[in-house]
Length: 196
Image (cartoon, rainbow, N blue to C red; front, side, top):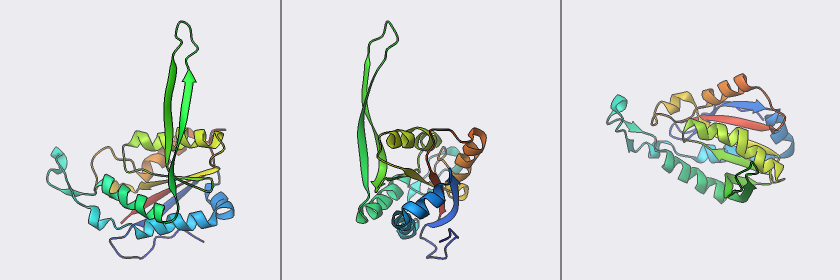
């Protein structure tokens, strides 16, 4: 099984590149081959062309038709849910112990999709969210024993240029991986770069 650019319908999403962090690709192939195939199927079945509906109001591309991230997310969510993937939320609470403060924080953390200990995040949002998914949220879910690996699906830079400014890209997260290196708390992860 290899990740080669596919020659599907021009409006459908394609996997252009895959980055394997902490041997994530081999880990998924060995331990979660079915889930890996389902992720590829969701990407293949996502019709990007019908979601090029956002009219830009930004000065640099005023009036240009862009991909609508919310609509892309909704379609991918529907495709994942057809295959039994679900969002998963965990409650979190912590207490600030530095005197004179005695405050509790109550909130939650959620992954977009979870199935058989594989977490998937689809990120068409701002750049900071992509780094948060990979470097904070996935290790939290791993520490809770809910996942053993993660997958981040992001647009390639060519697609990012057809979206509003500030959207993350495959190339950006690879730059962070190169600059940051591996950490002990990192888990096997792959980053999938997609483009119609």
